[in-house]
Amino acid sequence: MDILCSFDVDHPKHSAQEISERLSMRLSSTYRYLDVLVRKGFLAKDHASTKYRLGLTLFKLGNLAGAGIRVGDVALPYMKELSTRSGESILLTVLSGHEAVCLERIEARKLIKLSLDRGASLPLHAGASSRILLAYQEESFVDDMIAKRGLTKLTEHTITDPVKLKKELEKTRTLGYAFSNGEADPGARAVAAPIFDHKAKMIGGLTIAGPAERIKRQNISR
Image 1 (cartoon, one colour):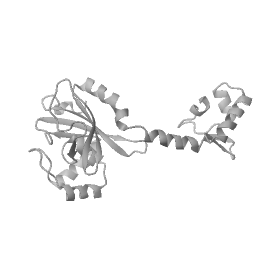
Image 2 (tube, one colour; image 1 turned 90 degrees about the horizontal axis):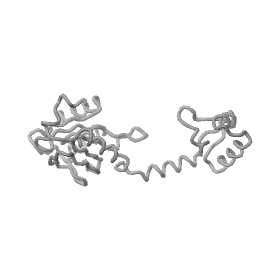
Image 3 (tube, helix red, strand yellow; image 1 turned 180 degrees about the horizontal axis):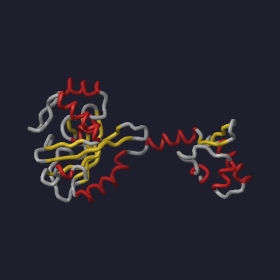
């Protein structure tokens, strides 16, 4: 296990000598362990340089491990910390067709009524928690959503103009976050940021939401 953990981004390859010195292990023992790891596919040997690198067995196991991790399980402790620090409600949203679905929600100490509860959904154009998901989709997806779902007006502040919506999506990508003011729930404001996976693909959104009197524009950067 120590041998496998000695590989990282800065050290993708090691010689047997380097591993031996790094782990303070006898060279003869190091070779025995390396032989087993290569035979099992955990390591592969580059015969040109005689150095070792991680093998395909780890790649297969890594994919299995990644598939078993729900984004909600990973995000929950961070959501609790955000709620404690901000005093507001925290939402975790994911894309489902042309809707945003709330996977997890942490309630604020000072409650406010929000449309998005666990399992609830909202159209992608209304509110920061939804629009953050839409902002990182292909333009063809946005056009298809507008054509099939339309831009329903939920409150007087909901964006219902396609041109204005696309400008807002571009602004969101530039800033790296979305801000909304009463677009889905009257009197509520929200700031949302995207969540990316290890391949830089957007897989969800994290949102701080609360009443307008507590989430003021001068506090948005914080």
